[in-house]
Image 1: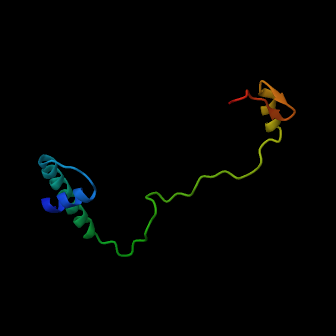
Image 2: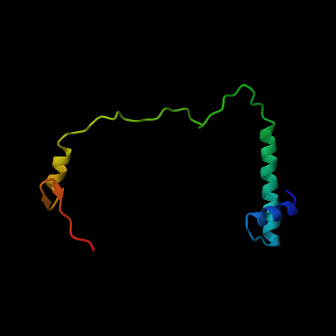
Image 3: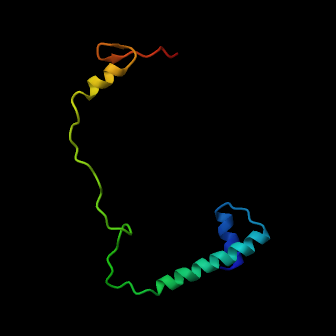
Length: 92
């Protein structure tokens, strides 16, 4: 990548780069662009697009109600309650 293009891009991104950073970043961006150009040469005809690298199905559990005693079990464990309500300290 040309240093002028890099400085212009950095300015648009509101980045402040010193000369040493510009030189280093120019080499690194150039290497990335070369890798991208190599990727463009790959033959991808006939390949289906994918959304992820591993084609797995979601692992979900069935949506079924749990124990009907769960709420009662939880209410029995609270330190203080009134009927089916949990009593908490006043917060101002």
